[in-house]
Length: 604
Image (cartoon, rainbow, N blue to C red; front, side):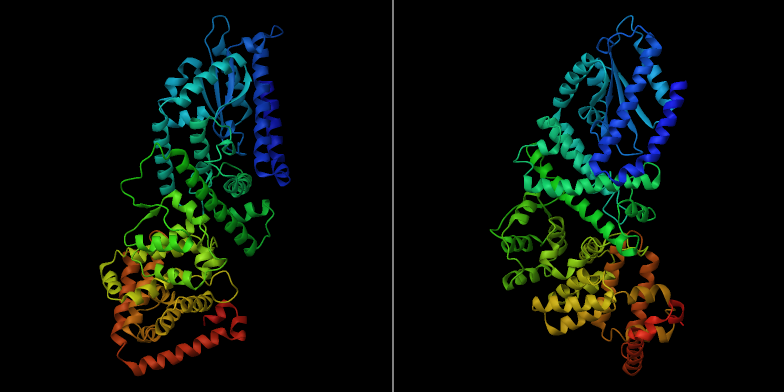
């Protein structure tokens, strides 16, 4: 059809201008403009199909029992550049109108234009039954929007949707929350986040809207009652969401296709489209803001969903939640320490109370005493992850401040620095290797607390110009002193952080049957206690990196290095010599002339 060819040409030309339009249009505004453009095309196609059916004898649109309805992100006016255009054609079979022939004409023209169409065709009468077959269909229907056609049909459609909205509300809520839990399990917050389905992504924001829609018939999240969405909460949420709208649009433009995963290979192009500096620093700044925004969406959607659903939902029987207790921040921290004898999760009401709890501008002595207690608890991870969720890690553990949300573009780590650090603490508290678990349990309670703090802060020195091993050791020392740790434990902790990558590097890159290599490694950990600790720390660190880093092969290498090092600990003279050599090598590496050499020359 000639019209379809002309439309195809216009659509191609339109898509070529989108990058320019994007450069001077905000996040949601860009999506709305794109949505309206697609509306215009669909309206034109509808008119062409009518003209081809009726010629000069066009009946009134309202008298033709057909309506075009937008669904999904298209219905919400959040249609991204290369996303599927979810269209529903709804009709009533009235004798004499050849409705099905009209619908076929509409669809054929749309297919010929090359638009990426996802369509459904239903009579008004079957909408209710269709909605019961699949929760995805019900979700799409409750966020539908009229585009073109008969307003009479749209009124009947709205009546059907209203019935659907009220149908089995509790089941809908339960199924959507279960769906969210599965998505979060499948798409965790990694260095390559899924902006649509993953933690803190658009699904989390949309879930608030969907449940708000079935409960309160609102058109936006902001329209929800004040006791569910407070103004002070909505503002940071909206800013984060607006930024992520822009990121997703830029991601589509950079990939030239539908793409929900912010892949590392696309990140430079996406950052450039968003105006970030074309440098490592610019890319890190961009990735950091993405992670921060996803965490903000996660936080507030969690709080709002609890308020929306508490009367329908019981806490999962397989999880232990803690609820608000304590008059101020210190009191709530003490409450968490008391509860951390077993793993727990903070109830959303606890998160809100923790954020609002009165606290000094900076941690004082009384608060530092409680902070120190965190690392004595068997399940400190539960406390630290709660602080992270509430965006209070920077305040509570100041040395972690610069690495919260900090990306790692090393091709090795799968998570931002703070998430990696949290995962390391988790694996320290859930050691799956029996021999390493025995070494850990043999430590005193003070040694365990020190090692737990070391595990959490081992990468705190990243993001600076200086070597993060030395910066991290210095940050640990200052913080540990504030926590009144024993001087000999602080000294051991400094050493562990300064050499925290040594064991994994030597185990995976060096000859473990070379006496020189073994003595060189062991000279940094001249006691069994230190050797045990670096072994445990290396285990936690490798497990915290990502899946399959610590496996049967790497475990065997670490164990071999550990055993060989144990064997040479008694040979003090040779260890002293190796230590002197290592000290000279470290001094050489810090010398400006050595740093000026090329990497290939440094390795000779």
